[in-house]
Length: 282
Image 1 (spheres, rainbow, N blue to C red):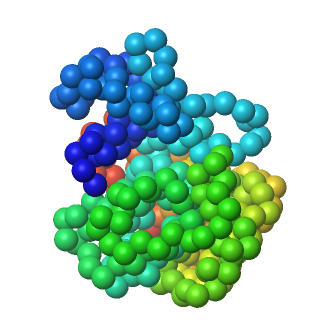
Image 2 (image 1 turned 60 degrees about the horizontal axis):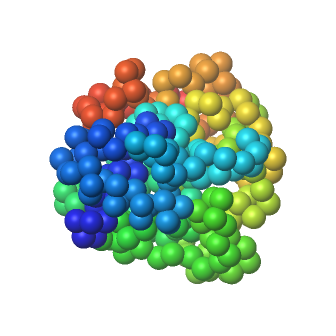
């Protein structure tokens, strides 16, 4: 990834953290001129990544609230998702064969995996994903295989029969999956049939399943189930705002639960230092 693309990635991460930005804020944070910031914003707007407004930009949050929109999801629970993603990435070891789905919390895990690979903490890692949101960033540091399938712009991913056929070729050491809802009975649910079929296929082909879900997803049931949290092959990673009563019920299902501690003030600058891990014993 070149300097130009890295700058755009930094702008998008700032935008996902704040929801909206002023040009002067971006220029100050990245140490570049306001004119350069405007050029980047123009290009990112053409790509559909943001919307220009007077003096700055915002995320393209639109549409029916019941419909999944990647950019809307990316703008919610930002600190919690980043803490969860970083914690999940700490579980990876050498010679992993990973699947990453297209969820926004899983994307944060991918960013943290990039950092570990760049620091030479891991080796011989291969990733299969249906997400279009990684761009070329992860592929700079490990082998990345993008599934085929139909492009779903609202979810920034690929899905359909071609995707399912592609997945039949693989067996994963770990699958990193999100959920639009996790019911108290352990049901993992999502918004649509295609996403459900894909996630179910990945669960069948994975030794370990890491389910990344911020606390707002717990105790909630979405439209279509794809699996049930049951047994020690499942690890739920959530944040410290999770309802203890719901966690206690899920714990009885024999799963592992990890709690990520997000910064209280919403700042992401010291997240690596403040992030903590707690394993709830079975």
